[in-house]
Length: 339
Image 1: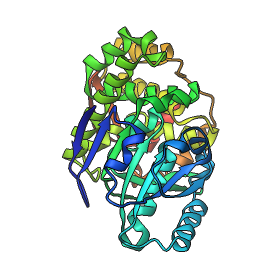
Image 2: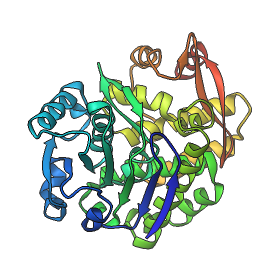
Image 3: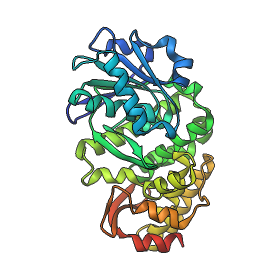
């Protein structure tokens, strides 16, 4: 097991790569936590949960809503949960985002931790203290920054994740290499076949390196005032495409990274060969390098992006593979790009 520490509010967080769901009770400070999960995870792994009351929610983005949050609050009241309670989110990004939001706001905050069950969640959603839900179809428009006490990344849990969902995780790993680590990017190129078969050595290294990259950025900028914005590479277009087309998060981010790299080439910050290399790697991992979408709907969604300020938006560009920077881009310039 490898551990990575994140310093944050209201507590520090430790990410444990290679720890097991069956050992979760070692880190839970109460005898019986309240477990938030979804039906799929419970059916596959429920027998390994620590003793405690279970609140099960639906799966998929359609469940990441105010209605789900309200349902959990009502269940917590019925269970007579109080400030001494501990909430354990066991699931992918949606479960972790919602469990973290509920724990951070119920009675003004109770302690919580995660067991991350998907590759996307292990390398992104459960790491860094962002918690929230969607409203009106807009991604994570309501949320808080609040760190879990711990995150367990159990590699065994990936065995029951559908292949198409695994690919969403690879999109975020490729993003981490593109913005911060050219050696990781090259490793992804060289070990594609072993990665896609979830070779234990390769996948644990990829998760660990991704967590290291994200933790170092979050430790510098927990509340996304500067450096943390780089983690949004591909997400400005990605979230808009995801909302308007309904494709998976990783697929939308993949297409968003390609668009962002094209803009960087157009602005002469990135060599065309580097943009081609990024698109080629995404393609080799079975991720789309282009998607059909309604230009007007995507632009309307961009205008609701949390990173927008007036008619400009904080946009992440690459200067080379392994190095990113943030620039304020006029929404009109983005409109020209997708025209």
